[in-house]
Image (tube, rainbow, N blue to C red):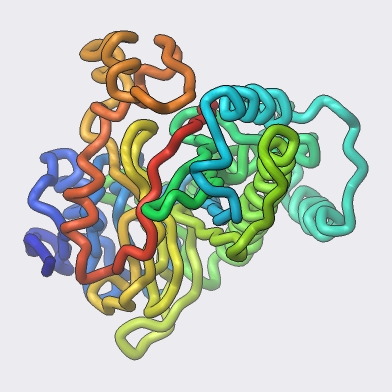
Length: 398
């Protein structure tokens, strides 16, 4: 499907891939489009909904400036998925319940972390050196990190909210493992720290913003290079976190299911991040806030909710979206609204056939709180093509 609407109320247009756009998200997009360094236009994906500062589901290309709150505080949050040689005939409810329990034991969720004093692995040593350099230049970060300073023990942990680990079946009955997580508490601390520095810079320079969360670092300013280095660290950490979690999850499957192999390399993609890219003949910074990169032939992962289908996709490289696509179904109501509207019985009904938590602690993640993933996919037929359709049989939530 083509672009559904174009908003022209700001300095640059906003191209939107959905008709379903609430007033709050629309106002955020208009505010973004008023920033003086926007390149060409703002792109809003079909799962777009209101966020803090920048709209979730927005793609923001900028000249010589980055908005830290647009990147957000779950820096590098994203998806990983791997297809295994296992098939539906080799699993049953009994073995999957064991897998659910094993994953729940082996992968800390919520605010938990690994309790053992884990030695720095060779892959973690570069993180340690870069983090030391970062905190030497910004000693205030040590206070911001607080109890998250033991970042090694956070590596290979899920977190809470909408983060999850799933065992899925594709259209041919092949078993996949899919997970969603980011840079954990330490990435959150880095994000908050630099967002506050950007706000202070705006005050010092007497810059008036349509929204204080759109505070930015221009290239060449005092904190720009430090922010780029810090956000790059957190993005790399998030990817390593997913890699280590995937290792733990596959080991959990191996304990309770027949012997298997991974039959496809792990797909790993960020959806809260910033990178230097080339678009419309210029080198710009591209911030994807709840969106994934979808260049021609890029493989990506677009999850539904804990009771809906998910998709492995191949990008089409659409230039109007800055080679991007949606990162998931997108919320249609707040967590508080979902808790007020739905019951535990509703949750059980909407997650029928899925081994998962079915208690009031995860009602805010009920499928009914999310947009229709199939409509989201229909709205971005010009951005990606579907390679595999997945349906979960196990879902571990934070």
